[in-house]
Figure 1 (cartoon, rainbow, N blue to C red):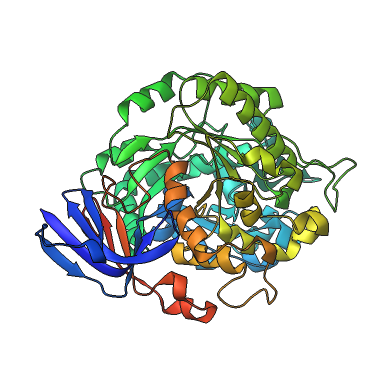
Figure 2 (cartoon, helix red, strand yellow; figure 1 turned 90 degrees about the horizontal axis):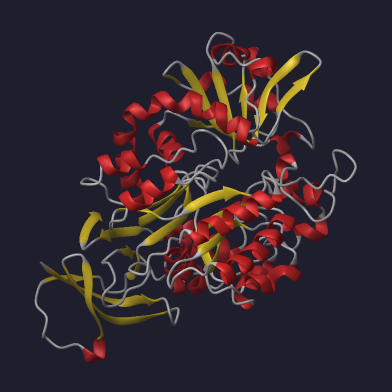
Length: 529
C-alpha cells in the first residue's frame, strides 16, 4: 500500500526550487516528504528511483471547456485555421460528417480584417448539401452554411430573444454568422446528439491529459446565458469509477439558484466537485465585444468601447448573490473596463459576504489590463486565472484592435505578482489545441512560441521565472479551484504527481522540446507511464 519515491529534483512550490529527497505515499495521500540528509529506513514499501528526473505536483488546468475539448480530441470536431474567409471555407471538405454535421473550430474574424465577418456563401460554394458549423477559435462566434440554417430552421423571425450577441445580417438577410450567447444557443442545439457517446470521449481525453501531466481540471461554462452551457456533471458521475482526472465544474450563475443548490449538495467528493459558478462580463477584442475604458483603435462606430454582456447592475448582483451562498464565482473579463468593474464588485462582496478560508473567486483571462488597476488584484479571496498560450493567439492584430499602447500592457503576469496578485494557469481549451503544461510554462517564461516567433518576445518585461510559472500551474491553479488538498508536494496532500524527464529550472530555451512527461500519478496510482 505504501510507495516511496526518490528524486534529486523534487519541486518545492514555496521556495520555487528543487531538492534531493523522498516522497512517501500511503494509499491516496502523501504521508511524508523527507530531505535526503534526514532520510532513515523507518519507511518500507514499493520503491521508485527517478534520479535527476524532476517531480512536480500534478498539473492543474484551471480553465477548460471539457465537452468541446473531448469532441475535438475524438475527431468529431476538426481544428481548422486560415488567414482569409475563403481559405477557411475551402477546408470544409476535409471535415468528416458526424451525426449529419461537419463541424470545425479555429477561425478568427480579426484574421479576415477589422469588422469583416464571414457569410454562408463562401461555405455554400464548397459544401451545400451537408450542414456545416464552424466555431470561432475563441468560441464566441459560429458560422453556418445555408444547409445548416435550414436544418436548424433559423430565420430572422425565429431568432432567440433576451440573449446577448448578434445575428449578423446583410442586404440578403442572415449571413450565417452569430456571436456571443446567440451563437452558443445554436451551438448547443447542434452538439446535443454528441452527448450519447460523450462518456467514452471523456475517458479517452482524460488519458490524453494524464499523458501531458494533468491530474485536475476546472470545467467552466461556455456561456452565462444560453439554455445549455456545456457543463454535464452527470457524465462525470457516470464515469467516476474509471476517471483519471479530478474535476471541479462551474455552471453559469443564474438568479434562480434551485438547480445550482442541488448540484452544490450532490457533487462534493474527491473526484467530482461543484466548484462554484461562472459568468461573463464581456466578450473578446476580435469582435469588439470586450468592454474597454476607451474607444477601440479601429472603431466600428463612434464611441466603440464594446460593452457588458449583462447589465452592469445584474452582474454586480450575481457576484454578491453567489458569494452570499458561499460559492466562489469566476468572471470572464477581457477588457479593462470589465476588469475594473469586476475587481470593484469583488471588493464590495468581500466586505458584505466574505468567503471562508481556502475559497477563492477568480477573474478569468484579464487581457487588456489598465496598470492603474493592478493594486485592486491584491484581494484575500481572489485568484487571477490566465492562459499564457493566449499570448500567441492573434498577437499580430493586437495593435490594430486595441492600439499599440494598450497592447504593450496586455497579459501582465509579472506585474500581477508584484502587486501581490495570485496567478493560476490554464489553457481555455479548445480555444487553443493540445497545449501542454510545459508549453504553458515556456510561453509564460519566454513570452514567445517554441518556434522562436515572434523574434522579439511579447512584452518581455512581463516574463515569469520558470519556478513562478510552475507554481501558477500547480498551487496557484489549486487555489483557483479552491482545493487545499492539491497543488503541492507535502504531507497530507493528495498523491497527485508528475515525473518529468528533465529539470525545467535548468533548461535553456532550445532544450524544452526534449523534455517529456515520464509518469503521472493520481491518488497514489500511476495513470500514465
